[in-house]
Image (cartoon, rainbow, N blue to C red):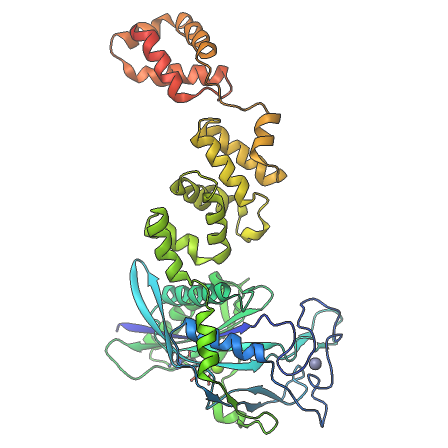
Length: 474
Ligand code: ADP
Ligand code: MG
Ligand code: ZN
């Protein structure tokens, strides 16, 4: 029997506000435990929440950027459950009247474009953090994160492969980063994803029984966990068994999913309207004001890169997928080296040397990369030397001019100087010279190689070829 994979993602984006969603406490990451709390986010009796306007604004931005409906009337609801990281005993969230939805984003997988539906986006507060591993068998509670604003983005079950889920996740991440409303750090948990996945026989319309995967703190892990789960569910179904609806945790060390708990349904949470927060009414003027302030988004920027810099679609997609990468490119290219050369260097040399680190941690600045490539373009240094200069830049953070000067790497383009060496080499290799004259032109590589050895790679290769040709053919 053949199965079709069905995936829907729930993404939690921590919004980049200075203060929490319902109180004035700071949202800064990494403060000593429980120092960023107050009676409101601690859930003391008798306190009243006040909504942070910026959270609403950020949600509207994300809605507009994904062609979603902005619900001008929306409300908060309480989602009730008990857990030690949730002092109020309920999470203030949105339920039947969320701020955003429905909408759509376009993703591209293996050159094919596809639309993925967004069901809804809602504003809610984050819970605190439990710390289990410092002193056994004690657990600590840190409530600094309690009340940090989140935007939950729920997709339709529109993805048909782990690869599509990966592309969708990247796209949402990229849009959030362009809008500058979420820092997108998966390791620190400011961008989290739960993946729902089921299989169904090809041709069947009814969705199969799903599992929900959690604890994937990188894009790669999301894809790996989904691929594992496709295999696991397929084996169960082929054996004639039933998939159990449950929440599974991805174990990145063992590369498998492990059962965490049975999965609740919405009615288990006894959602009810929050009596402490009045309904939110958004004016059309405010929406239009926000729409007018939206920055250029990834798809637009990608089209512009093709148009303005003449880059291939492939390069443009990679460079504009990340806002910082795209900014880096534009600054580097503005120094005057050919855009395609800048793109090539970024996608090979730079990304390789960064080894997965963020571009903002690169010791090579965009200005320095641009300068380096301009030096190659002008023939000041050879492309080969540029690679060694680049490694040096990556380690020392110094500029290319300084390195080239200190290490004496300027390309030798002085005809007199090179001609003397060319004559020496020809005189020292009479056999090869005869063969060359007899028609073995492949030997040119040998001669130029000799010259490169003598000049430590600094001879201008074009001039070297010309001089040998003249010298040998007369
Ligand atoms: P919950 O209340 O458990 O969060 P939702 O109905 O809100 O469930 O769905 C959560 C996510 O799971 C959505 O992204 C949705 O598209 C996806 N989903 C729902 N049913 C299935 C299914 N059978 N297979 C795969 N994904 C599903
Ligand atoms: Mg859910
Ligand atoms: Zn507080």
